Figure: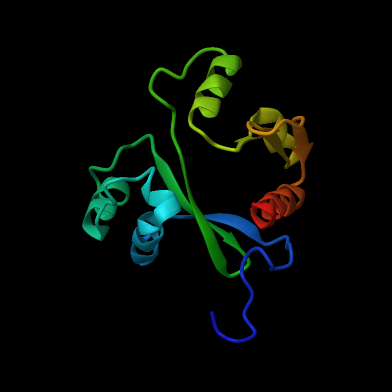
Length: 150
């Protein structure tokens, strides 16, 4: 980072948080992210740019998977994909057990109620704490705080 630039953890929370559909111009960045050690342990082997293009952008790409880059302001901060997990139909408790088994620290729940209220439910999966339904900016603030503390 150049002088005067700030990391995402240090940046101010803004209302400009959005998901942008994955596009060709994001593939090299995504490839680089997937090679980072803390990500690569979950994405081994790291797919090539050509494989990412085929997996997410080609006409043969899986129809049920939606891939996006999360942005805060002009800065890309993460990759998110949504899909229906095979065999995930059924009770919410079963889905939460699967989320817990994934090793994630939090589950972000966006159901019909959350969409209607333009909020997100943040459920801690590690270290205790209670589930809360929050505005997006508050979720971002909490997640940034967690990153700073780890």
